[in-house]
Length: 465
Ligand SMILES: *Cc1c(COP(=O)(O)O)cnc(C)c1O
Image 1 (cartoon, helix red, strand yellow):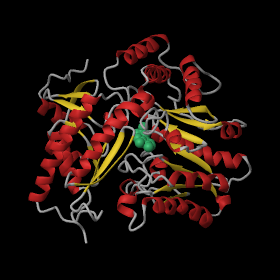
Image 2 (cartoon, rainbow, N blue to C red):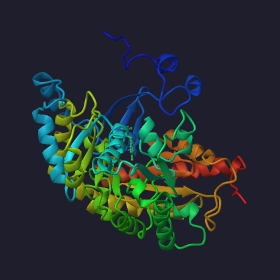
Image 3 (tube, rainbow, N blue to C red):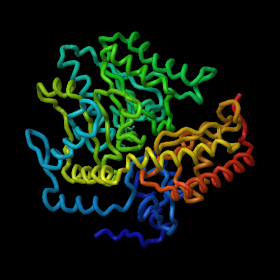
Image 4 (cartoon, protein in one colour):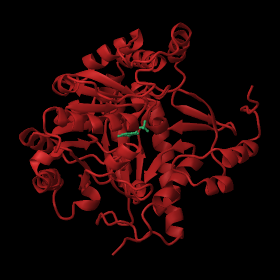
């Protein structure tokens, strides 16, 4: 038995953690100096740490705990499935009931003719599948030179070699020789920082047409697909102008390229619809899902594929798959999670109650002297910190300095709110009640007040020229 328990002193746990555990997106050196925050339990929307503090989780873990923590039903289903059939693979003409049942359920929930499911263990793997699948699709149609994939700067599609290349984050590309060949990045629809003097609507059209220009540049017969998140999540909850998606739809239709909607965050209720593609009326050929599909209780990802693409891919062996593709325990947990979302009308709750209430509160933050804009769709929201409300100019300090100082104050006030450079973002569990949202709001205001003062005192309340 492992003797590392929740009852060890925090400092000891932190020391062992720093000595032996390499964390994603963290410098282990600073973990050694500061010590990780160690979470020991969670219930509903609240985490408990090793010091006994109660923390409001306004990020739903990493955007995934849609139904909230502590749902015994998911644990019970997992235990039952482990006893009955803990594992069998879906390679070589094998199948099992949980994968069959979940595939049928996802086909029913997903819009349009997205009726076929290829499983992975998370979003990165599913996007790697998508990259190979769109290229294999065109090759099977006798057009192997339709190979290039267009994505966007500041997109997030995961961190594997394929998905990290599809993503457009400079910090990821700078390590390990990414992007791999055949992937091209166009501008993002981020009006606040990049829109200049244009209206958001003009800017949305302009950024969508960069797709058309890139297709022209590469040649339509050389482009396999365009991939995008309906709303960029890790990029800072960038909500595109209303003109953006209709124009992208038009271009993909006219130019005979496939459209991949990465719904890893926007899927399963986050926008107040089942999928972001419904919110924006996007017509994807493939949809990437993960995170909320199991509310994060167990790893699972998938590509949900249209009739058109599945028919072509299905003509021959698709030499692709993961040991855990369609893992029975993960599929069983996903099914139970989806049952809860449906029966408890959690998507309606986001659209009609929690979302509108969070929006009302969130937009009140726009009055704060430290806040340049507030944006929200459903239960994903962001705000821009600013030194000058009138100009939309970034801070003079290195991007992220002020955001990090603000996140520190949120942590100090037992609120998990993330920063992406100098934007603050939330994506709470979808089951938040109005009184949870009141607590979120109070702590956010207090944290903004304190951070504003700290930033001012440090002489950082200054815009770039
Ligand atoms: C988190 C995320 C991924 C990657 O999923 P993992 O399960 O971490 O591999 C891909 N796309 C989007 C939009 C994400 O938010």
